[in-house]
Length: 181
Image 1 (spheres, rainbow, N blue to C red):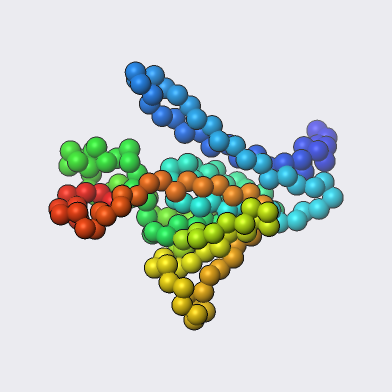
Image 2 (image 1 turned 135 degrees about the vertical axis):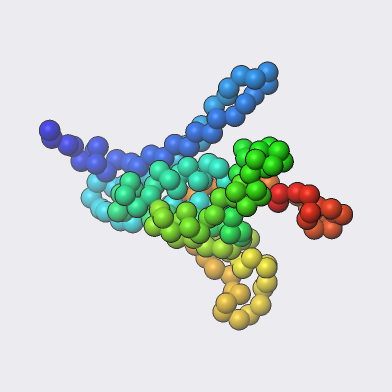
């Protein structure tokens, strides 16, 4: 079977499908797609950056593990936390079927398994014209020392799946004892 260069180099397409329940109990499908274009004359490394360890990105990481992705695609996951709560398991946790620890997706081990880079950092600015993300450390420090200096990550394609956060959770009485952050 003869394979044309177009089929080999035209593009790499990753489609993330998130199935949600929509009222009244019907299934709706939300599809988000992006394409990394590859020139037929080069094998230049393409940089995919995933910002956030949400459910959609977990599926992308599983699909783009080291055995499945082309050698010319470099994937980086950026998230300020070590783990993400899998909300589909929270009702089972509330019912005491799972422990809070069992509801967590461990991002670093997932990234290591998939052979992708993991950066425990926060995105603080985006330059869409130059395709750059600017990162700071988790604490948000702007110190001059090199460890806390802003880092720039360049991308060819970027995807955001940052989930949600509750403001003031730490100050809410009982939140640490009775919630799954």
